[in-house]
Amino acid sequence: MADRSSSPSSAAIWAAMAAVYIVWGSTYLAIRFAVESMPPFLMAGVRFLIAGSVLYAFRRLRGDPPPTRLEWRSAAIVGFFLLVGGNGSVVWAEQRVPSGIAALLVGSAPLWMVLLDSLRPGGRRPGGWAILGVVLGFAGIAILVGPAQLIGIEGSVDLLGAGALTLAAFSWAVGSLYNRGAQLPDSPLLGTGMEMLMGGLGLTLLGTLTGEWSRLDLAAIAPRSWWGLAYLVVFGSWVGFAAYIWLLCVAPTTLVSTYAYVNPLVAIVVGNWLAAEPITLRVLIAAAIIVGSVAVITLTQPATSRKKVVKAPALSCGDD
Image 1 (cartoon, rainbow, N blue to C red):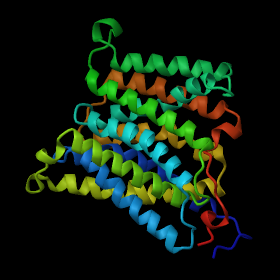
Image 2: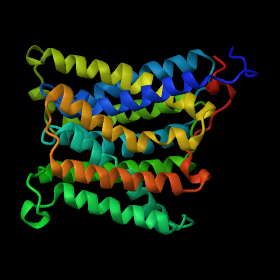
Image 3: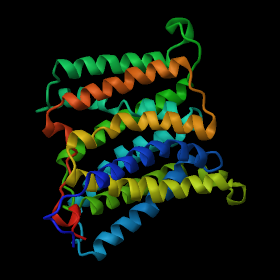
Image 4: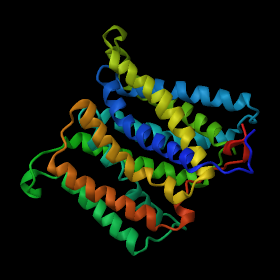
């Protein structure tokens, strides 16, 4: 049991922040390595089925009550939008788009969240800073994917891949907004395990419907694809999320929310360092604008809307 009378040290908080920054930022490159020789939807399905099974079993063994039918339904809806629509689009797109650019386009999800939140019944109308952030963000996306003759900067991004990544950001925004009021278990880790299980099933079904089993050749899978999958399960789905949940309990929300615009920068640097992905003038300009717009939106929203809604009882905040 953790001693609630003592607060975590700054060093512990920043170590956890570094884990979230580096781990979640580097998952884009791990995805690229994994899909080099693995069918994308089946790879993602296996990732989330393994990670979700372990999280679910761990929390049930720790005493969490069995989820209700309504909680399973909510987990299925969240898992569909976040993992099937969001992550599924990413893994498919990274067959065509460098991991750093993928991270930049997916990092635009807060722009969609502001727009969707303002359109739904009872949603929050964006303020001036949020509107500025949205306009700048979409301008940055236009610079990143627009034709060279129109933008005036050399280089190009595969349009099908960019479209899939835009769909991923949109789907992630829809799932995140739904998650705010969804009926899910009090334990964040149990709820996440359920979402991973349902999303993993959806991705496996998607891989089946698109004929990926016929393209799966275990003998032909490269070692770094296996390592990429292992990294996604262990670090992306377990270590990174555990650090994030802990930070939500002990650190200021304004600090925790910085992952949204640090992760794309980490992905660009890691992709260049470990996979020689080019960092062009177009990428640098677009990154500065998109990341800056997300920072404006994140840091100027009211605290109640910035904070990820997680039903976190005492046991999820360091008691076990």
